[in-house]
Image 1 (spheres, rainbow, N blue to C red):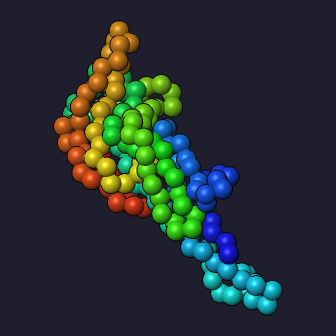
Image 2 (image 1 turned 45 degrees about the vertical axis):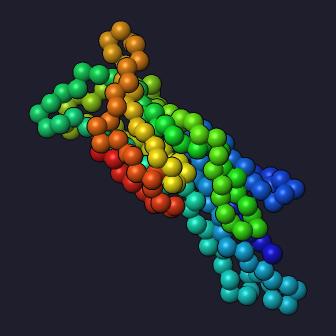
Image 3 (image 1 turned 90 degrees about the vertical axis):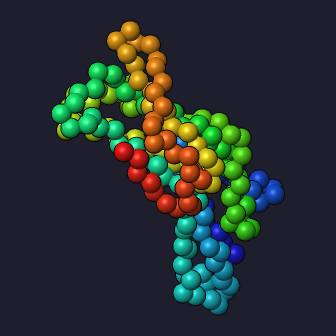
Length: 169
């Protein structure tokens, strides 16, 4: 019997695989179980590994309103209420999410300045589904002091569905 999972991790003796997702960048996946024997190998029995995503992807697009400029430098997004550790049961394919915390997704250059309504900043976060979350945009003012702005239409949903992507503008 073979089950596939991603990212690669050494399973515990209990059959659990654990992941740290405190950076919001691990897409946890698990496949169906396939089997074979000497006469009907896994490659020849017609069964293929089919992976399913066990996380939710949030894509944040930040852009100035038409005709506006934005004076702040955007450093990133802070997502609160995210369960930052996951355990995958290889026998059942079930994922369990624990340890609530925050995930910070930052611009790779440290900050971004949207100079006009033509500029866009796109940041992705991969989080477990099912928990209410809060979203803050982190900016840096001219004194290089962090300032937190709450997004007016913050996600207070159930955190999304397994294997889905949501776009927040």
